[in-house]
Length: 521
Image (cartoon, rainbow, N blue to C red):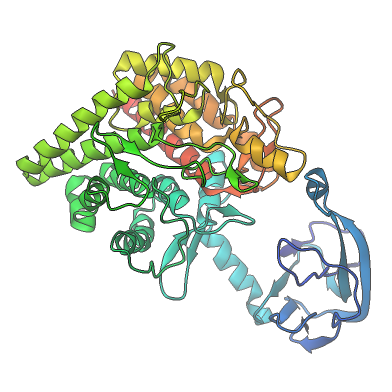
């Protein structure tokens, strides 16, 4: 952290008081007699370690000051969001002492806290180097680009990942493939896409071969993961061209399609009608993964609308790739399968009101209006014609659109719970029963532009830049995980969510490219 004294009317001293916890992120600390408040002097600072088993913490300043060892507990520090959500919200933190360092007008002092010591004279150089690597937060787009790089993670073995969000998320397979195009290609970092996809491809191939994944990605067995992987690769092919895609990833898309059509996934069955069937009554199997009291909040079983929209798109893309390679036999096979899937899709999901069922099983149809149907209109290949897309889009706009994303359930549907507040059960249920998800704005606007074309650009820009105010709330310069489904649409959940940042970047890039083409013409 850099501190610069812009003005002062007298000699000035900065005082630093480190508040220490030494705990898991989901725990709280209480005053105790075990904490070791001893501080060992190091270069322009001290080394401290409150409890055995933790790494040492190095606290250092770039300029020489004095450290006064005066350990004391600061009690009942309050965390208001934890209180709002019904958690224990008070904590005691240990302050081992304080630093005093003189600072002159115009001077900068750097403070470092880390698990490794730094050379005090190099702090300014290191700060400048790190700052130069980052995108300055001087605009809405630059804030999103800067946030995008915060999700990248490279392990010591060279494998690269996307963390799903902060502060408590992991490397989730679905989130990785949905986020990847927006966080890399839309941020103009094609090389990073291929580097991260190398890890993803390795995990996909190991999973298809029923070998250990040999990486840190979780939830690889979720049935829609290979479908989202095909979509991510399709975005890459659109960006670099089919030939460049083939040179880099070879037959990966076809291998994923064959994996599905050959019934090798244990929860993804290709039925005779060309549609994919999955069982989700006991465990969430889609991005709507809220789980409470041993069961999914929204048990989605049977034919899931986005699974089959993605499947139709994957078959059409596989046919396109086969055509580019000159494999007419495979092209014909993929086209034949896509035609059957498209016809069954219309017959199964489209109802007389103009929207699509969220999922269809042998039991009575669920008429609830949910956002997953948007992918049938937004994907590069759609089983719907333009009039059907328009009717679907108009319905979603009326029922689900908010300034902060699409609601997970229409206010007119049974069980609508828009406010992500209250106890843990109430919040978990709200996430899939009415809360708004920003990442769905990407496919929504993509579908909108397919229907309304250039006349929809101004509307798309207004929706995108409506998120600008969120960059100064909760997680600075980034987008919260989800929002209340009713006004004032307060940000909730994790303070930063990869899929949200990614899809806003991707759709912003798409709109900008269309505007540039319009200006050129």
